[in-house]
Length: 151
Ligand code: SLL
Image (cartoon, rainbow, N blue to C red):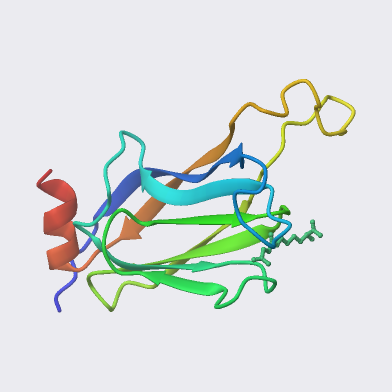
């Protein structure tokens, strides 16, 4: 497919997780303490389905089937668990010639004090941990150019 020459498109995104404490004994026979959701979207909540074809979340190996593929928006995974870990989020675009982008996120379940200890006072408060980034497309294929510029 034809690429547009001399064009750079910058698309701002936000990715990260929310987490909350599970009611005790919510997940029988497990040591899971938290429920969490990891997601990637536009900075105004756009679902990115107009230019992303597939998102692969790679969880910690303690999860069964740690590789989770999401092929439709919303591009997110909800799980329960007991620990924090770094996960990767691979974005694949509708135009296969556009190289996939991999993002890394530290899943956060707890609030921390300034000294790095886990905050006990905010133990029951939901946690949010998000980061901003930009997808930069240089000379994007025409189809991608079109969906990115006709919003
Ligand atoms: C830690 N380095 O020790 C981290 C690893 C892994 C968390 C945390 C698995 C849940 C399940 C889960 O919560 N893993 O087994 O289904 O803190």
